[in-house]
Length: 395
Ligand code: C2E
Ligand code: MG
Ligand code: MG
View 1 (tube, rainbow, N blue to C red):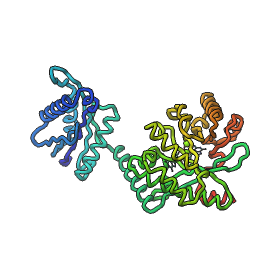
View 2 (cartoon, helix red, strand yellow):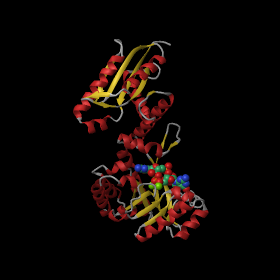
View 3 (cartoon, rainbow, N blue to C red):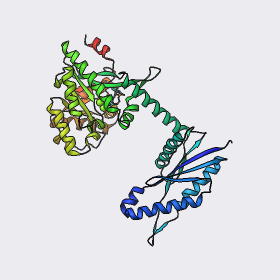
View 4 (tube, protein in one colour):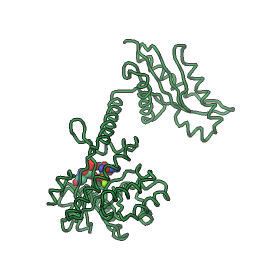
């Protein structure tokens, strides 16, 4: 093996908890003790640095074999297992260590750091008090994230965010009464990337605001176009939790309605239950402001989240969308059937509209009609489609 460099990122497990319960003075002392123990393990060639509150970096310049690195990482973990004596009292703690190697997995100093960080998070995920190398699958995950982020930025910049529309029908009559707008992203090979793979990333990176706005604008413009042609098709747009934290969100919606000329009663916003479980007063005033624009508010994936029923009365909610997992299983699993039945009757009691999603079979449709569920969408009727295809369907 050629000489290589190893970088270890060491993070004290649950340090925030220790610091909060013991007080900052003892917290500081613990960090000093940890630093001393680390120092005592390392030789003169090795660099030790504290890079954050409870984070240390160890840089080993001439690694001859990975088993060397293994044993240093193990020593670090074992030495932390001995209690720390502070003010005549013993405290126990552990550390998680992430390891990155140059040139094995990283070519620059910056990469060494980000990879060690990713490995350290993996060690935490696996239960803490352990070390973890930056590995092939982490590498794979990391690269995939990076490439999706790049695709997303590119698509936003070049206005290449696509929106597909899935028809929503009145179940009894089969009439199309609305659509759900579903965002689509294409990779270099023109393959579709699932929103489940890029919405969370868009939320983490803040790209969700630009992405959400593009979807909203396109959806409102599409519904306005249909209305102009004489079709009253309500468009339902998914709103991510992060978009709700934007104080300006309601203005953005109002402005989009104005710019596109879409009557607000043809717009519905879908939010998940978990998006509503934040600051109660803030969410309430946001929803009230949105409702006062005249649009409808739907709770998406209903039944999978906290399902705290109280908010249904306290928030201006108009529609419940039963999660597709219950529809999928309702014919084979009595519990799912009971949930669909209960949600439907709850919705009726509270005067809410009910939408079943994920209807794939005729038998689903028949049961849902019997239960009194008015609206639905699913592959049994139509898959999501580009605007042109929906235009053709209307004609
Ligand atoms: P969702 O809002 O619950 O949307 C329904 C998902 O179920 C869509 O997946 C739709 O294509 C799929 N679906 C519809 N009918 C059937 C069916 O009969 N069987 C099955 N198996 N699936 C069906 P899609 O388009 O992949 O979107 C996944 C999720 O991504 C959405 O779930 C929504 O939470 C999110 N999403 C999609 N577009 C947007 C968007 O513009 N903004 C935000 N924030 N989230 C979005
Ligand atoms: Mg939805
Ligand atoms: Mg849903």
